[in-house]
Amino acid sequence: MTIQSKGYKECTNSSIFGDIHYKIVSGKSDKWISFLHGYPTSSLDYSAILSKIPDTYNVIAHDHLGFGHSDKPIENDYLLTIQADIAIGLYEFLNIKNVHIVAHDYGTSVATEVLSRYNSKSLSFQINSLTLCNGSMLIDMAKLRLIQRLLKNKWIGPLVARMSSSKTFHRNMKNIWFDRKRYNKHLLDKHWELLISKNGKQVLSKITRYIDQRYENYDKWIGALQGSNLPVHILWAANDPVAVKGMAFKLDSIIENSHLTIIEECGHYPMIEKEEEWLSKLLAFILYQDQ
Figure 1 (cartoon, one colour):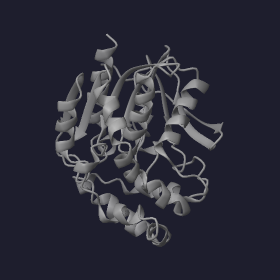
Figure 2 (cartoon, rainbow, N blue to C red; figure 1 turned 180 degrees about the vertical axis):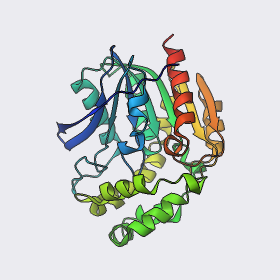
Figure 3 (cartoon, rainbow, N blue to C red; figure 1 turned 180 degrees about the horizontal axis):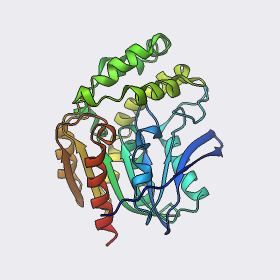
Figure 4 (spheres, rainbow, N blue to C red; figure 1 turned 30 degrees about the horizontal axis):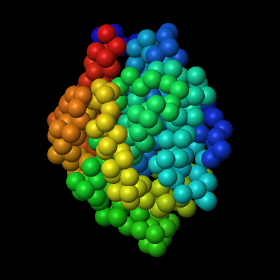
């Protein structure tokens, strides 16, 4: 497998919800790979790997509304259905006709909402495969951290968000790494700066209520996975203390056309902690689908 290095450009697309920031890498075909990031970070999660995708693919990674460089409107309710609207709108704006979707954490629920619409044949593009990485879609199996439970509380959450600091951010993030020596403090410093930029602290509690939306939409989103014929790659870090390994095996058992890959000795952010192995496994699956 030849992996070529390419530069990328950063852009902004205006939506009815606000400006959405995205990174794009142009390839030599009409094939696309879209990366959907997790909570509470941004598309910066994928910064080390975007230019390593073979140039037979175009690549896109955007910041969800309320995250990263995208707008963070205070009045928005940050529904995952809105995040799916934004992703779909971006694909349509770029005239994407076929795409492999790669989703991590929070992004997996955005992806399953997109999938539910795809199953109903309401989209203008073809999804070629779906990769799910350490997202607590099986929310009843999630081992939620105390900070998540506090932040999603309607009354306590806004206060906890206002009191948050770089120190508490790093402590909580480091706790979901397997190998603390691989914790990239410089990168996570950038994530903290992006998290609090614009109205970051003011919207964080609302965003964290995505956890409740996973309960409310459980049958719809898990049903979309069970009712799809798409190839689904369950690419899972084994030592995630929140989206535990058991979720990966359960997803593999209930999704008909699934392929399971476990990355051992790795925490919640495998695209950072074990970048090369994660990317190799991801590309092997995608390239196999396109043979």
